[in-house]
Amino acid sequence: MASLIINISLVGFMLVIALMILSSRRLFAVIVMSGAYSLISAAMFINLDAVDVAFTEAAVGAGFTTVLFMAAMAWLPAEEKRRETPRIFPLLICLVVGALLMWGVSYLPALGDPNAAPHQYVAPRYLAESYDKWHIPNAVTMVLASYRGFDTLGEVVVIFTGGLGVLLILTGKRRVRTDKEDES
Amino acid sequence: MKHNPILRVTSKILFAPIMLYGFYVQFHGDFGPGGGFQAGVIIAAALILYGLIFGLYSLKQVAPPPVVHALMGVGVLIFGGVGVVGLVLGGEFLNYSVLLADAAKGQHWGILLVEFGVGTTVASTILGLFMAFAGFVKEAP
Image (cartoon, rainbow over all chains, first blue to last red; front, side, top):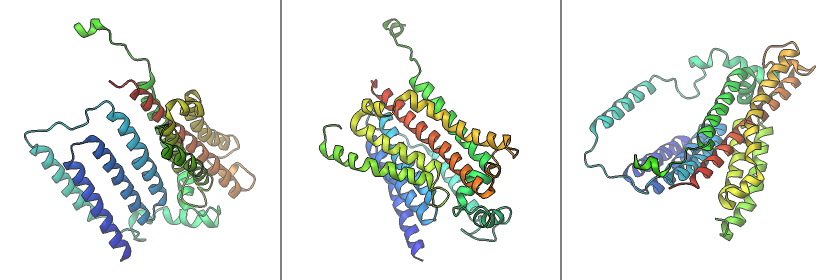
């Protein structure tokens, strides 16, 4: 019951922040509010007992992304341009996709249901072996690093490649624009 | 922001605990919540805080970009290397049980090393991205 009340108030906060982001036109305010949105979703992950995910969300979503957005802001005007005609079609797509997602969620098994299909296949073996056989109390780390080590290696390579790509774009030699090119 | 005494003193006090917490999450990953990814972002966050307050130049003296860029690859190599060592010692790729005579101890050490590789790559990638972005912004129109 307590967790339900906390969840409802957290979702309420997130909705309010999302509406404020939509209505605000000042980029700085939008960036700060999206940081707050991430922080609240981190609190939500803690409520779901996913402390690892909450760490990452708080550090990357609320911290690092906000800093990157601030850096990008230096290249942008401070206020969003006002649009005269409201866009109906994107709004329609958002509503339809949202409704489809809500419909899909209703078919998901209940949170933490031990009889759900994904918890029947290999998860019981992982949970049983992790502590009794390998003496590692945190089953999440055991699964990520050992049972699913190959996937994690792939993830690390993805992070490495992504970082490499961005670094090549940002720190590579840039063409200096000369006056001649401006004229043509 | 170097000239604001409140920010300067607060960040100096906070820097060491954030770093320590990052290493705690890194090396305690198999006992409590956390692991390489989380530790990497926390350690990078501490260094980014330092860079935000004391400027990009000071940050580059603490963490020289060539070293940071090299560490990105080193982390992947540590992870892959542990897998290859398992292969050489007669197990499958990324099978940590063969690393030591005792299979459970092998798993412990394998996970610790692999998580260390993950943490190295994540921390250095995020730090490298921050430095690249901050350096890019300096030339903003």
